[in-house]
Amino acid sequence: GMSLRTNVALYHNTLHNAQIYQTLSVAGTTPYGLTNATSAEVEGGELESTFIPIKDVEIRGAYAYTDARFGPYLDYVNLAPVTNQPTVSSGRAFPFAPRHKFDLSVQYHLPIDANYGDVSTTESWTHKTRVLLALVPFTKSGAPDPAAYQGPTDTFDLTVNWTNLMQTGVDATFYVTNLTDTLYAIGGAALINSLGTDNAVYNEPRMIGIQLRKRFGGGN
Image (cartoon, rainbow, N blue to C red; front, side, top):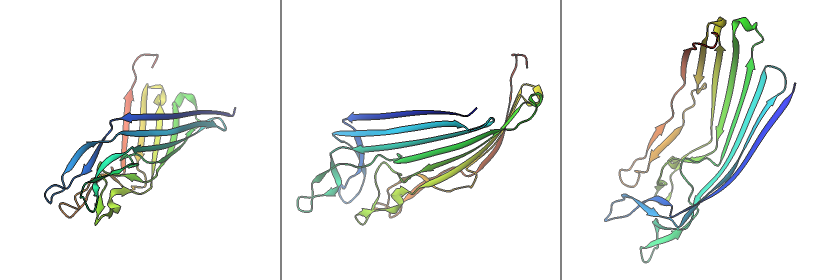
């Protein structure tokens, strides 16, 4: 029959003497440096639900909220205009940590004779909000560089599983990752102030594959 299962988790972590990367200004150059922040706060929550509306259909959903920020630190990027000394800043976001993430998947088991095995399809969707791409936030002419961030992304995957194919003990999987071949950045480096350019690392393209596994024993 119909069923629903839900899990909820909340968390709060405090990091003392957290380390933070910054761009330093030394003799006209802009090398990177590792400095200490007084602390960092990471807090958020996770919600997971599994809903079975009818036999052979399973719907799973998940939501994650993450707020990860550094506490006060000496900011060597934003120097005082008169003394040219670092100022005190706080609240800089962690890199590679989206504030919101959603996952949704639907699994359907085909109603076929058990002698043929179990055939199921799973379609999944993942959404992530904007993320900071680099350990050191980019700036261009003193303003945030758009290349420092990846905007919201949506990806889709498809999987077809055939378990115990024809009672042979063989499991076959056909999969397509990044079904829509979405392109987005997953990393980068702030070189605009030193080399006049930024660089970025991009995600894997659409991939299609087949996996076969043979199980021995257990009556197969």
